[in-house]
Image (cartoon, rainbow, N blue to C red; front, top):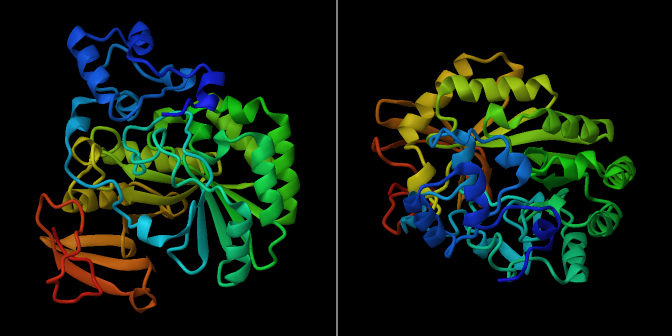
Length: 378
């Protein structure tokens, strides 16, 4: 496993012994955490650790950052959205016609325990972009692509110089309308933004040449610290449009009041509520964080009932192998869905219904489905 230079340079906590100095873990907890981190490493920023209430073992911030015994479960898979089959070049995915996704790093400031790319973040670099000439050529040759999403890992953990070199090449492509950057840095390490004037100046400069959107990952209102608000404001003043993708997570934000407070708090600071995602059935994530689809639909209905129009602009989405499926609601066991985005053009915009078991959390495609265009039940 390669050393994570970003984490080393920023004093990020990576060992159970370091964590124990703040959270005062029991011997049993220490043993469990050491076993879990053999499979999936731990990394917690000092900023994020300060958001945890150390006396509360059920603290929602803690659950997103600190390993738990539920991560030993092997239910689920490591590629739930079909990223492998949509990879055209190393580090370049092209699932939807208009969007190219580039994995520019496998590093994150913090390893979120609910990460859907657990197979690679902090572990493996085989899926990360290397041949930038080939990637740029691919995008140039596919004029249907109107936007590029820089992801990883966390796109803001690369150096400012590296990010600038990437943006410099992308802004020159005429048929790109805008560039997106995916990052949880405003949440877990806002000093990366607040203390780096060079980063802000660089984003402002390239944002004048091509619109830049930054998608954050706030999942709980307690994550919106003063430092995070300042980071968001600096990005906005630099001309970036900031939106947010949250994930519905068991024991974190499934309380409708909490999720509604998150959406309202984001809107208050000018962050657009973009998506709420159904938690994916990722191995070592599913058992710890996923809520069943019927329960999730009820929660989101209650959240929307608590919000004004601006705060409920989000779509509730299952990021499935076949596309982004909007979860519209349910009537008993019958649930209603719509393809918000689809890998196959024939599915675009299609509305369908399915009978869903009360404990079902995802669709798992099988060969015997009566309609092979639609995702089938587990």
